[in-house]
Amino acid sequence: TIKMYKEYIFISSINDNNRRGSVFIYKMLNNVPLFYTKLSPGNANDYFGTSLSFDGNYLVIGSIGDDTNGTDTGAVYLYEFKDEKFNLLKKMVADDSTNNGGITDGYGTSVCISNNLLVIGAPGNDSIQKARNSGKLYVYEKDNGGVNNWGLLTKIMPDQLDAQLGGSAIEIYDETIY
Image 1: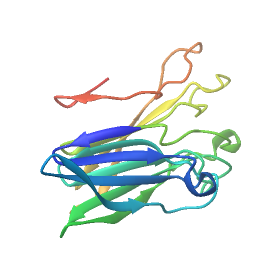
Image 2 (image 1 turned 45 degrees about the vertical axis):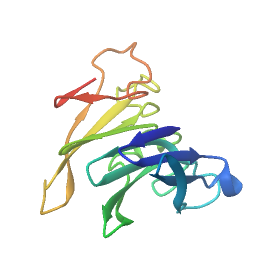
Image 3 (image 1 turned 90 degrees about the vertical axis):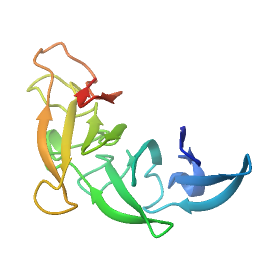
């Protein structure tokens, strides 16, 4: 994944460092990209950098192979850009990813942050009983549960039994989630 925001360029490499994954950040100076920093938390096979989004002072990075809540359930890292550094604010995991074993929920397959909303997709989540990989979106709001806390606002699930892989791609425009 490659994203650009103002003078910053974000390049993810999910296979870097034994598939731990990394995000390389460059800063443009006089039209020349200069290496700024590298982010690479987690463990082997976490695939950090699967998805990323940046808005204002916040950088969100998906890591679909994270095993915090079960095999490959996924996680999302929320960084705040402050004092010229990307500081880890929160590692987020789904509160319900252990449903149906939680295997390969893909939490963090897609992420999008805009203003005070953060949406995380988990297309492998079995959100509808007996509908494998129906998918789910997790919607978080800034300051929900405290200052600078990104608390869960709601979960969005498909309403049909034939739905598949909801949350594979996300976009927010004018506070509407697509």
